[in-house]
Length: 401
Ligand code: BGC
Image (tube, rainbow, N blue to C red):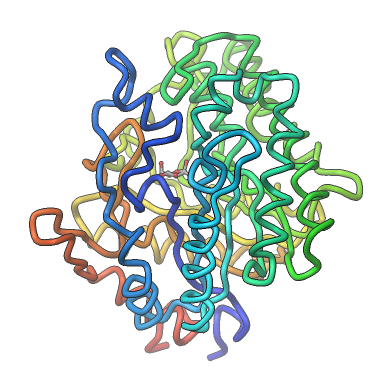
């Protein structure tokens, strides 16, 4: 029987700086975590001390069959004050990316994954008049300094979630709930992506560059006009405006697709999303597991005509057998989409390690690898890490088949 995935398929996992590094004290998230009354209940604190342990972490991931890895650069370390770039932080990330390249894993480097330098947030964040040029200046700097070590660049992680969580749900910084602003921020982020693509290309011809979008499968909670109307609006704001907006020379070279769940849009719910109907498995986050949604979303994303990489997909659970099921069922959905003609070139699981899950703190467990915070941050690979390694090493969903 032939393999389910081609030999050059990229296999790996993803993290982001603030969720693993520790002590990112100069960004808006640290501020939000320590602001009384904010949605964040925990401090990210030491993270999982990846800042100091990146070399061992990469070696472990390589030993688990990964041939690619996604991480993010912490903007607030690299540019601690406007226009002031830290040579030490730049040198740190050069060591990190060199260590990654030395393992043989292909790097996917995200330039902005949710966190903003405090000074940028204080000046108005994405709503400031010069936000786009300020972001582009940072992107040019890192591309000039590190472009040779960044074969894949993700400009912005999940612009939809930055807009939705930060400006409508008040669940992420800046903690605003405003029905107009979140849509404006979405537009700003798309423009910032285009500016970042230009910036990266100006400084480096070594990088393929793309946007990483979260694409939930959205459905109306009930078969009535109010639900259908709101579902159309949310689908436009969260999915279509980004995919349809990726036109023109600056759209990038690839698209990162991030999928977790199906959601039911409900105008009667204060969050605009209803509870999943009975029969759906729920994760630690309360999210509904629906593997075929990934296949459907990949088809939707394929209409951009861009090559696709799944840059995040995963499950929060204390029960690792559930993660093995989630992995297999979602990889089967990817294989099916590919068999149906969708150009998917890699799969990066969220996440490599149990880590800081934003406003939910360290409670949700998304990792293939556990971390013992009481035992010097010891890393413990879970059975799901070995299940993933088998698929990555053989290209087969059923390695015995
Ligand atoms: C984000 C990650 C996050 C994950 C699980 C995505 O929205 O990019 O940072 O941890 O989903 O919630």
